[in-house]
Length: 340
Image (cartoon, rainbow, N blue to C red; front, side):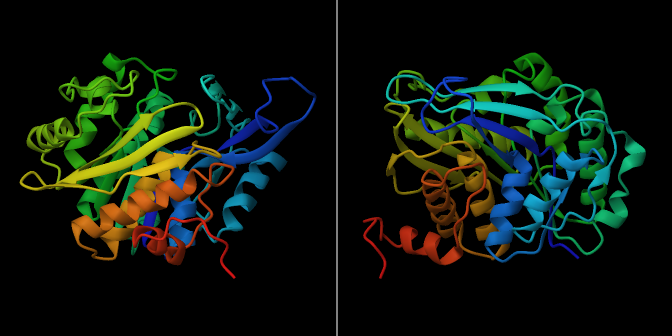
């Protein structure tokens, strides 16, 4: 049985080649991805038995999504088949001062229409130690919000560790809707993961002296954000990724974590981006891996930041890197020299 369970939506990703704009030519790359699926793939690549739970239609596109996950060793045995469609997202990769764009076409997808009777959570969680979800899944529909709560309730009964990446998406719901749904779910969460804006957009907790759009981050202010999250919701840990966006191609990347009394910062990476989609998911997976393997808080943070740094060099949603590659970067080998 899987040790770590993730639950959410896997989507078909359609993207113009390279830096082309939508329909600048007549070709699009077709792959798969989605928050919790991305985490499952990363963890499986790290050698952890991981299962992804979702609902997909019983046609060829749903089958292709499952085969994609299976190719990375992810357990898909608890994916329910039903409904009519796989959600789609279109990605246009930005360059220089032109930002990347994402357009969703996911309304009415199979997972958004899933109902309580679709998932046997006691059977799914049998033998599992960890459950992970993101704020994207409860944003899909009232049904999925109920399903996440049911899963959290069963996981908590089994004394499993529960992690949540807040992942606020303004194209899916408003800040008011997000707070209404997410705040009760936080009662079940042990480890909260967020980016620079999530806590502000969902819970109104803002880092002082920071301007995300202007490229100014007051790192120390995020210690206060993490402490406020821990105090408000009783998390064991709160982690926040810190992205300074210099352009669509070049970012500074770091992260921090707090247990309420101590605050640790990772080293900061200068990243020239190949594909930044899935960067936050790769951080979440790295942190889950580090904590699951009983690394120190600081070491788990460094592993997560390095894993995410490497993801920015990999095309597609999935982070196709190994533990050895992550450890090498975390240890300081960021030269990019050819390995012979």
